[in-house]
Amino acid sequence: MKARNPPQPPAEPVRTSITVSERVESESPSPVTTLDATALEQSPGAGIDDRLRLVPGFSLFRRTSALVANPTTQGVSLRGLGSTGASRSLVLWDGVPLNSPFGGWVYWTRIAPDELERVELTESASTSLFGDRAMGGAIALFSREADRQTGAGHLGLAYESGNRGTHDIVASGSYLFNHRWALSAGSRDFITEGWYLVPKGVRGKVDRQADVAFAAGTLRADYLGAKDRIFLRGDVLSEDRDNGTALQKNSTGTGTLAGDWSHQETADTFSALGWYTREDYHATFSSINAARSFERLTSTQSVPAESAGGAVFWRHGGSHWNLLSGADFSRAEGYSHEVFYPGTPTNRGGTLLQGGGFAQSDVTLGHVRFFAGFRGEDAANGTAFWSPSGGVTAGFGRWRLRASANRAFRAPTLNELYRNFRAGNVVTVANAALRPESLAGVETGADWIGERTSLSLTVYRNSLGDLITNVTRSVVPGLITRQRDNTGSALARGVEARLTRRLGPLRFESAYLFADSRISAGKRIPQVAKQQGSAQLAYERGSTLLATGLRASGLQFEDDVNSFLLPGYAVWHLTARQQLPRGFSLNLQVENLLNREIVAGYSPTPLVGAPRLVRAGLRWTVR
Image (cartoon, rainbow, N blue to C red; front, side, top):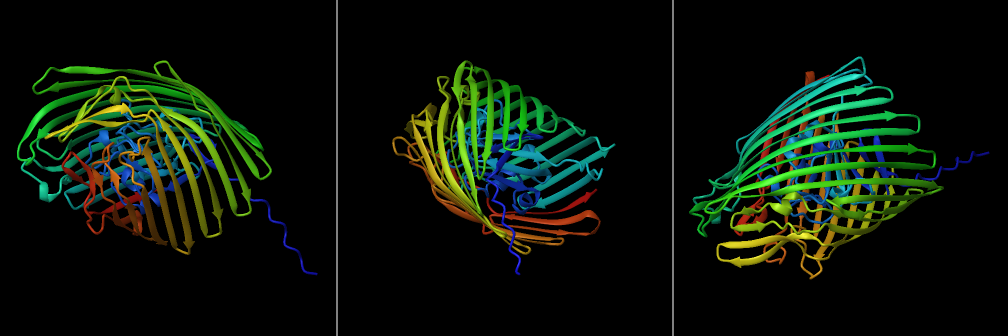
């Protein structure tokens, strides 16, 4: 008699989670994108921001790489929410906020991409855990750790050189002793001559190549006990930039001290996290005549800022339910000291106090899992805000269905409240009367998981209130004046699709985002492309890795009145690595392989993105 096939167990309901702090994870009804060290290695880019651009929906305030952009334009957003320089998404490094305490932007140069273990991205506020900086989702970066199981540390050294005077030296090492204590350190020194920010046809005598030189270092100590884990970490960054003309420059010195303790029992995890960040930003600004033949210094800025904060978590895991609860607190203080030529010096700034309590739970009943969360927060200096969230997922064979809803907010940063700045002949004025932004979001989607193929489809709708953007106040010859303001309501809705296919040593990945993001008057939200996509094919067998791919973006607008159009673009990239004996490897990275010109902004002169960038180098790692 022919034996019957045993019944297949029901498919596990969708379980997506993002790591909150070391050993604490939060389940979420929304998908979480995870990029491991191999995936990060397959994507080219000297900075982690360039590698994350392969994720559709990941965008900075402008299309320019952090290599040559003023750091105040490096705010990040996901799924077409846009940014004003300040991020609408939270960025965490080993659980510690990486966003600037003054402006909310991110110094991506603080982190060497090849020293990361993984990156996790959630593109919505589907949980109630992270607070206002995660209105549009969260990005969690995690450093590589010493191997506790083998008792092995590591030692690594890498050097890369490329066109445009680029040199990059990365050194890292870790040592594990008694299987409980670990000490790790890393450093990075980088310099590039950069490229001209304006096209050749309009370039004038005042124009110079935008360049950067920076040095970053990290020192970390870990205790890796059976139940208790502790880490203490310090990191510093010093960078100097020429911003494309003889008189426009900026420099930054910043650093963070952080610590985390976690205790693990059978079903319960307790964790406490604390940090202190200090930042000093300096910049000069100028006006330029129409022929770009003459430049005049208009102002200098010095912006010292600091922040301190902490969080506590308790997570209970049961057979059919989980609960994560806790509280957090942060204090940020900063001032913009500005000297005008001619004019009177000004000193504007203040303090932002924020704190909140939260709880997030999920319950599994058969094929279905229900999610609910709630957060109450002092949005900034006494303004209360409530952030509920909820969702459901269900598994049926290879299919998994999901839906969620949430409410979130973002308080204006000290930068938006108090700091004026100038980019070319565009002046942006601060606004101390700004109100917090709010968001009400819903999404639904489906996933299909096969042996070699996976598909994912998500439809979302985010309604924004009191959206903060740069509003055009006046346009006169030689000067455009904008001011940060709450522009009323906006609607961001779209469709996201992902496909992954494995075939032996080949892996193909593609992703597409359609994002229709509009202010209530009908104009498109600035700096948001309606269509974005990427595709990548990677071959990895033995000691050889080859990867090539395409990143494409549709047209978008520079400003709130949609008068400055940024055309769409598509760029190819290439990555290759060949392992050699004795821990050596050869590496090659090519960005913008066909050297396409990308219009990245207007000042009001057109600004261009990165040309073809080629880097090759040698890496040595021993364990």
